[in-house]
Structures are given as structure tokens and as C-alpha cells.
Amino acid sequence: MKIQVFGSGGCGPCKTMLRNVEAAVVELGLSTKVEYVTRIQAMLELGITGSPALVVDGDIKCVGRALDVEAAKAILAPFKTEVPK
Image (spheres, rainbow, N blue to C red):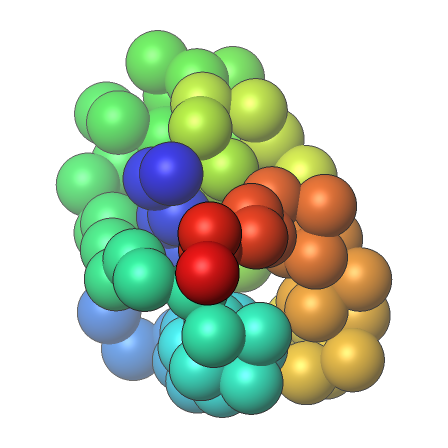
């Protein structure tokens, strides 16, 4: 799974989104890292016109607002897979 937060380097809500998505990943026990993308061209290529934005496996999940941890978990939870015992 590839999780990306798009935003500008100095954007407060973008940094909040990054922290909250990282916390959600940890709380859900997902074995992936969150990539913080600040390249405007990368945003435009995906059709992202606002920030912050959350993208999971190339699918835009949220644009224009910083998710809290619970909202991020709600988006990411379906991607959690059971580990065989």
C-alpha cells in the first residue's frame, strides 16, 4: 500500500494532516510509511488542486482539509489486512 500526503512545505494544515495520517497508520498497525509530497507538478498530475490531500494507492481520498486521526483511520482501515497466524 502506498500512502501519500500532498501539501506545501510551510502549510500548517498539511503538516497536521501528515502527523495525523502517520498516527493513524501506527494505531492501525499498518506496515507502510507515509510519503509527504510537496512537488506541485506531482499534485497537478493527479488532478489535486488543493491541499492538504490524502492519496492511497493513487486514489484521492481527501482534498482541502486536514483529517483528524479518527477520520484518517476510517479511510485507511479498509486497507488493513489480517496477518496469518
